[in-house]
Length: 270
Image (tube, rainbow, N blue to C red; front, side):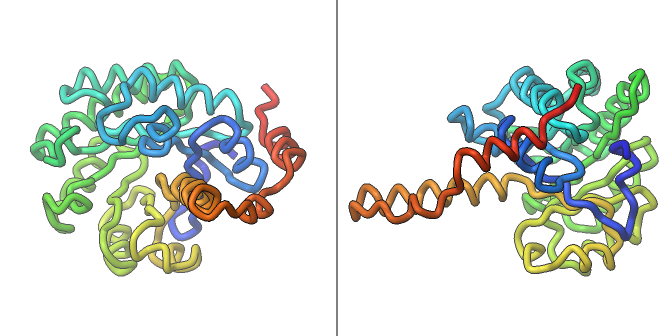
């Protein structure tokens, strides 16, 4: 099944966010139907902070490397498109297509600040991204994000106004990260016709996939959460090692052979 066809409102799939080739291959082997990059998780792997420190060239190369490494579609988290102007956003999408990714998400925040682009500017950026996506020889799924709610810069009403405009501009998937409650998420899904992505973060981690389905969601992504679970394991074990001299946490690992087997199963056959 191609990436677009996975998106069925009311029957969501989990899009797992990976941070390197090995994690992407393991997730694909363990059942992920699609992989996404995460700007934060990728930044952690190269010793940088999220939101503005990783360049567009680095992010696109990273997404392309993951796409070449796994047997499932890969979507890129490309922040604000690494440009404030519409032409720059279009150039980012064109470069992503050339890199072999199946889709990408674009935010409406003027990074590295947390200020949203003005409504008309945000819509024009999505229009440019859509035009670039439609010019591709391969199918490309564009996700338009309304991130102002997450940063406390506009309310849910404004987010829905923006999503409707992004949908009118041709966006394939719509996304409001951390909208509040599952009821808020259901309101978003009811307000638009395009598939909606939900982020498993904040209070929404207390819900099951069936709850997202009932809300009308088509896709659930993980963001940097799974990477941070891994980093928590590093932190907790390191504290045990260096503060207590206790090596017991190392007994919780899985074998190198199992890791290698999973990576082999998740590898691209191309």
